[in-house]
Image 1 (cartoon, one colour):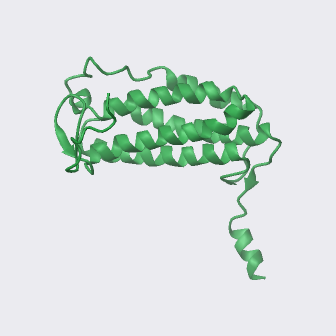
Image 2 (cartoon, helix red, strand yellow):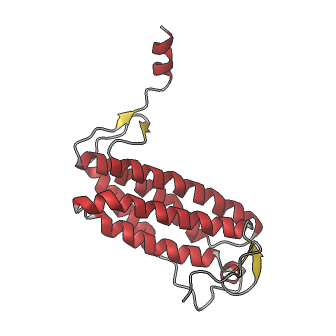
Image 3 (tube, helix red, strand yellow):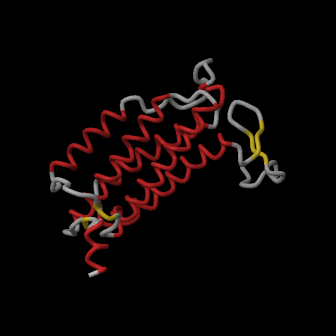
Length: 195
């Protein structure tokens, strides 16, 4: 199978289930955000894999889910009221509850949050925070698409919970390397600089 097909050279791409749209079409932008999220999670896996972290398996499972979500978003017939196309992978139905259990497990080992924290710390935590922000952007894009076309509500719930999980995993990555989360000083920092 060749990587290049030349079929998109004029700025159009094929959707799953048929039809062609411009590459800047909202639907393409939306599943492109999911693809970017998937790649960003892959980037977060690298330092965790080097440490032999068990979180790698969770993240790779989530990447599999994101492929399924991207396929559904790339298939207008999947959410047009006619039901999902048979050739599509199933959406990860029970994963939200599983993500909630992973969040709860991570939170048990973390100090309670008393204020906002700055994204960062260790390399793994910084990459997970980046994935969280990309997840939130993907969620916003899915919401925009949902104003114009039917979108399975399970996708929005999944993305909302995924961003929470990525936040918890980022904090856990800092803790695993004995690094404190950096609290946001907020207005107090600005006031002290003026003094």
